Length: 483
Image (tube, rainbow, N blue to C red):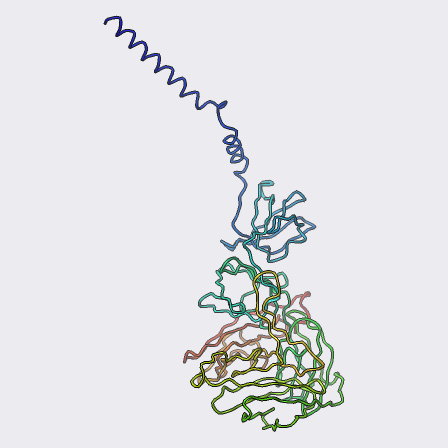
């Protein structure tokens, strides 16, 4: 080998050695970037930590520093510890206390292992994308499509939808049209429903003289008095009035959620019959008005004793309007407008504002508010008592689509319990009754057990309907009085 070739081989060997040494140096700990080190350190420190998508607050104990959450994804309930160092933020990244985190709130969390059995929350955040409807009532539920309608907006819900009342998980069909709720979700999905104001029940005692008359609970529930009736009424304090043939009696009552109140008619204070003067303004003028089944001449002011009345307005070529009317002021003007039938009019706005009966039309004494997204009031239909007006109250019975059919409803369970259909006693289960379509309240009662109500949509499917309700829960010392 000549001298030039030796130098070339030696040079190649030296360059190769330098390359190997330099390459090894790239993996030296001293040359790892600060960001990479921190990322690796964070990964090592957080291998026992997890960040979920969404959790719903089921319960919390500020004394024990414990919070119970339900995963929106899996529906699994988990218990976490928290402390004063837990960082809690609202959707605007403002600091909150645990006291400000409400039951039913949708949150994201971060946590770390406290010991072999417990995990402690390090962070709680209310996501900015979570929306809230407050003061909601009268939602519409389509169980087949898993859809909930709030006002005029439709939302989906999944199997892990959480419905809470009095800190207990309930089924979606246990919500009554009288209940007031707070609803939370994201996008087109509902995650949680919290019943803020529920319902209870009224049973009447010594009511023989008022059978066939009317019962009015705070102007919100008005119904014909029937034998052995069980009336579903809103939770809270209200005035209860019964009327028949100009005679009336009233008392102040307080309804507790899910409990029954037995009211003795004989103990109620009879009141002197007062008369209200009603000025009906009817469109069209040829319409026939009946009040409690009697044709009424409304060309002049109509005098009616204080109380509740069934009002029906009919005219050829128009949709029939059926309403409940409460007279409780000395004078009022009520406007009743019928809508033309669809084949004679392109006007599809047939539903009366606040209509609680069948048919369509409008009555200007009703006040309804549509829900709006956000934390403002949403979906609450208010019918406050007004001493200057005769009010058009809500009725908890049949929907506008309700109609009797030639088919039957068979109720198979729970056996030996009483069943009430929109407050009317139907017998001891098993029960067979006429099928009436629409949304209805079925109340199940048995002595010694907690009464339950279920909202059921009966469809016009040209078939009999078979229903089996869940077994009732026995009363405990904490639920006594629910009889």
